[in-house]
Image (cartoon, rainbow, N blue to C red; front, side, top):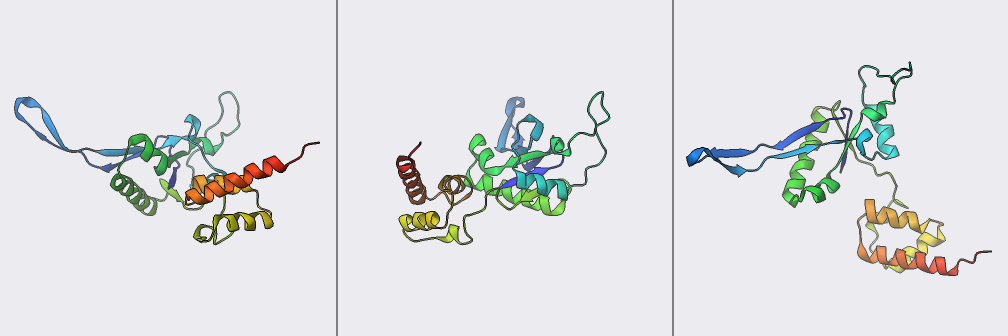
Length: 188
């Protein structure tokens, strides 16, 4: 899941850290804290075009900033920050329970404080056809249909790997079809 905030330094506590005092002045952590911090766009947070449009339509940016020495307002996109729970779960080695806890808390924040957090539900690349993600037939028949309907197999492969269901048999069939297509292409 991907979330956007209009504040470049946005972060939140997901789970409180619980600890108790032990002999000798030390502490024992009973429950580690769980915190998330959004990545600002100007610091490398990748923002897809659909997220950009949705955020600019959704947020009410307070105040105007301008470039140094110029009377030109800055792009409000540079004020946004991004959080991708899939990427962060891998970076932070979260368990499935921790990831679910983070996603549920951020969904709650998106509904209770919509001017701070926005859940982006749509994907930047749409599925090739409406029931693509529900296809359960032979992968080769799916590839044949995609070719007959004129879809770019490399875009479909990217969708399947990144935004789709990541089905290994479909990915393999698409990769084979792309390789065969490259072998059969004659350059002048």
